[in-house]
Image (cartoon, rainbow, N blue to C red; front, top):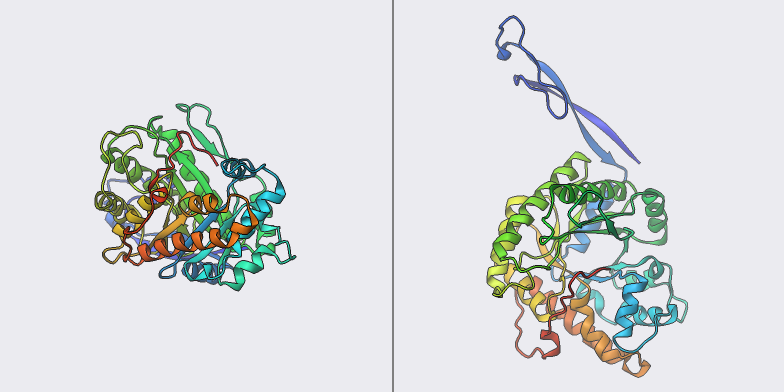
Length: 394
């Protein structure tokens, strides 16, 4: 799937590049008198052009990502909130409601699916993947296998799923998926430890390289959890460290930056902090970290909502788009797009049309926020309710 070419460089530096040892001086000669050839690998993949085009399509003006990749267990919790049992029939009915919403492609460029959904069809027999493609929405797939305890850490987690990822990714591509998602988390109350940060960054980098080798644009998601009572300055400090490590290891794994998307959490105070930050303050701190740590080669920053209310997530995104950015700054929301939809649907067939209109309202609001034109005027109280859950898992 991939090959490497080599560039020969002549350098006057006395040191080796990368992991090679320092050169030694002999006979007291100056290091400037010696020249040396260094080979730097440049990775290429047969999917490079397609990856770049897919990433650009997802990062298109006024559009973002609908995340409906909750595991069956998490989807069951959503269904239980409106009194429905966690059955495949009910999960299929809910996802059909979302994915067949007329006009959704005007505001949504990509949809992240759970594996079950990628292979499902509507009750009329039409594949969900085809429903998305007809609206020019790129199908995506969650590929990680969830969080497990990280041995030797301060009660922290690691994300599993690298075993067999290449073969699974190849099958997902055949089924129609063109991008992937891998979510790992960092907890500020638990440190975070250097071990946890490195594990998160390395796992994301390996996943990204494997995804690109199999034609899938990797969404890189290092989520810094909202849990805690820390100030926004502490979140900024941790975000700088985490994103620095992530891009270091992405480069080490020869990941094509033009063929990825970043899905970070916004830089906010901890959910239990005594003072709430304004959208302008959150935008300022978040954009500060982005400018310091994210190369402009990355085409899109697709923020997660992370338990913010529907209105909060949209206001914060809007504040970040009040001036031009080097990247497409947009959304990849789950709860912040779905909460009102669930409340409207209530599992009743007669409510499907109203629920789909509710989805369009939220999708359009975030589309306007991506363009920097959103106003919260007229938003209802339900949309203003926070959705933070301590220790939330997918």
